[in-house]
Image 1 (cartoon, rainbow, N blue to C red):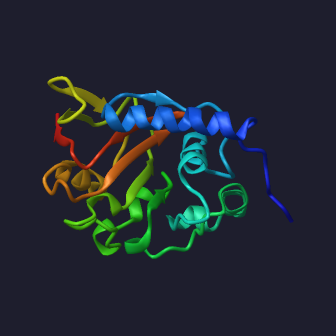
Image 2: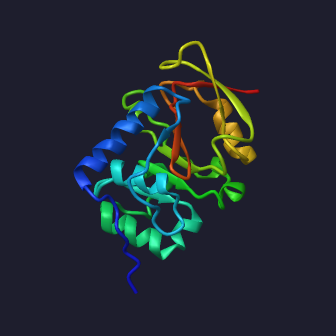
Length: 199
């Protein structure tokens, strides 16, 4: 049985809109942006689906956490609308997408996502993490390129593994993971150049 649902109403313009919003989020770390051009695929949050619609295509290896792999609607729609593969090994994934339900049980150290290399630091994996909230929970202070002095964000309830990844941001630059946190239709990005402190 097909679970295909609609994606962008205007594929070209909606994709460009989302891409520009994501570019703003990555270039201005800690800035909340909203992606409101379509609903989520299956159990995926709307912003998660829109990140993939804007950024993934048939040459993009994706790694999905277990809840998404078991979600036929999410898998079918990602395949149909982007053409991307969803069974990439962690070290080969361009994007790794973590469902909020899976965050407490994932041991990120064992997954060995690609941190890039000195010749191609931009080939690192981008983690897309579904958060319980972007307006409550643990507070973090961000510093680095694209931030005037510093900014503060909240990222809901995080696992200790995700917390450790956050606090390691910026320390390996230019290597490291780019992080995109989503909640509902909201997105905040923390690129590998950003320094993070718990508050």
